[in-house]
Amino acid sequence: MAVAFPPYDIWPLAPIGVAFLVLACRGVRRRVGALLGLVHGLATFLPLLSWMTVIGPDAWILLALLEAAFLALMGALLPPVLWLPGWPAWVACLWVAQEAARDRLPFGGFPWGRLAFAETASPFTPYAGMAGAPLVSFVTALSGTLLAAALLAGLHRDRRIAALLAAGALVGPALGLVLPSGGGEGRPVTVALVQGGVPGVGMDFLGEREQVLRNHVDATHRLADAVRAGDTAAPDLVIWPENASDIDPFTDPSARRLIDAAVRDVGVPVLVGAVVDGPGPDHVSNTGVVWDPETGPGQRYVKRHPVPFGEYIPFRRQLSGLVQRLDQIPRDFFAADRPGNLTVGPAEVGDVICFEVAYDGLVRDVVTGGADVIVVQTNNATYNGTGQPQQQMAMSRLRAVEHGRSVLVAATSGISAVVAPDGTVVEQAPERTARTLVASVELHDERTLATRLGGGPEWVLALLGAGIAAAAALGARRDG
Image (cartoon, rainbow, N blue to C red; front, side, top):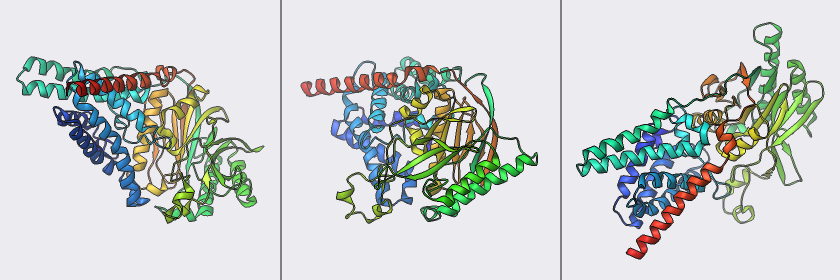
């Protein structure tokens, strides 16, 4: 399962991984099923989240254990479900229920490792435009459960049934090949994504705040020079990444002058990623600021879902004396409650910041709020060379298909990219480089079926899976 995800991208292994867990749990006690689910979860999440070792091996192992615990619970529920008529569909629903729980619990959840995020460049991808990431996970899981059912039928020498089930396992990806994807014709604009680069990798760059800001300022001046020289197209808007300025430009006059000079030089609105003090003395805000060349800073978006233990510390008072590393976050990042709908030049931008792209509702909110393009401002410099930027990029590709929008990913040191509404990567700047991407993208107003349906399909599939599993468990207890 782990190598189905980026950076390996061997997507057929996702349904095969589902099939292995199903076959292992067939005919075992629920306690054994829980153990098998835990093993499956650890075998998935320890490799998948190995980039967490940059923070610390303890954080890596604890997070992998937490995520694997949800698989353990599902494993405990699988044995009685696997004796029900139509169990391949019920197990696929239960898989969606497990993902829905992980996406929300605890502290707002952690969606990494959803089947859908392994299927962002596969025949399963177009299902995102119909009912979002949950449907992609469901169809992927259903292909795996049907494959497991075919193998079981083959072991019982029922070749006709085995052949039918094997064919059923291929129906999902086969239909995906003919489903439409993409947003059709849109209104073209030219965008520039500034990847200014950072002084180092890992956690070291965090102490080089002024240099990171100057890198993005200098890159914007070079862009302006290239436009005046006729070497590149003039952009209609410019996007800076998250943390392009970790110095608050509203309290530091020098930072404000640097940004203002760069924006005036390029002559178009710039979406600036900045860490801003407040509200109050105990918080800072991870912010996207629309900076106009004539009027200066205007509309802002403040990140709605700060990362627990990364941007804020739950139970700070209890933990601060136990884990010294938490002192690196002296103030909690504020959690705002408004979607990132901003007007940047000719575009109605839907801004999501970094890990927010993993959460269905946060991305959907900006599209239903009127965004005609999605922007992901991110700073993955801590994780360069670990595979994490590739995993997050896959999420951006899925969001493009899900909502029929171009997605603009601006990163401090990679991976920055322009993603078309059909999920293809039009332009890309690799990790550990300083580069500015200039590309023509199309703005779209129409909404996909997935956008219109919202979170409904996930709730239906998850409740159906959880309800069937609960009924099967109660029935097994009465019979046993």
